[in-house]
Length: 114
Length: 115
Image (cartoon, rainbow over all chains, first blue to last red; front, side, top):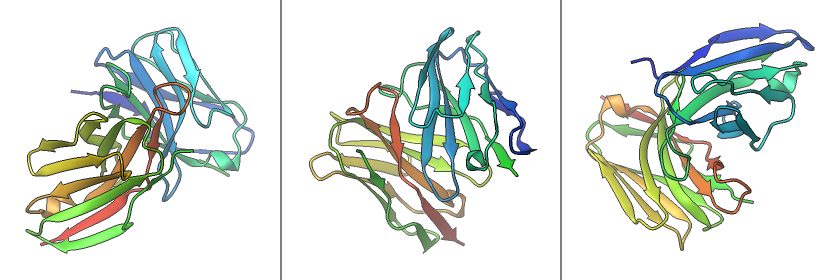
């Protein structure tokens, strides 16, 4: 019963490096989301997708890119890492949108940029 | 701009006590209000989702209410147990924002239930 799987769990990057955070779900959900959670703060939506080939910006998309080539996978790319991107990143999925159904979350990727 | 506030930031209670967690939101134009649980080092687990047309939802020992006119939601936990210790977050599905996928999260209430 895997649900939403995120890799890696931890990562340290240097300023200016790039990396891809991986997210895969095995529930055949149409909707997928990327959030960031800064210490002591609520989650903020970075990008979301309503199906393969369709993505849209959330509240804080600057500095990130996404793609959705399959139903299962929704990777998040950081092109030029900055200290402000130090955060915990959560991927989530749902069969219908946030208006109708709760989201299933992965356990997060803890990213530090030094 | 929608803002979601959760007070208190932390709460410690003895086992067996009934308790209420509070969530307030500034804009009543929401399509739902959701409560989540977050354990340390883990992702969020959905507890209850209340549509804007509903007043409450129940699941086991949990009951969540919604009063849009006053901009408030409460999560009631009956007969608390040490296993209930976690951070509880509420999120408002914000109708006013562009796109229907926007959830505005509070910062959470960290609950500790002492044996």
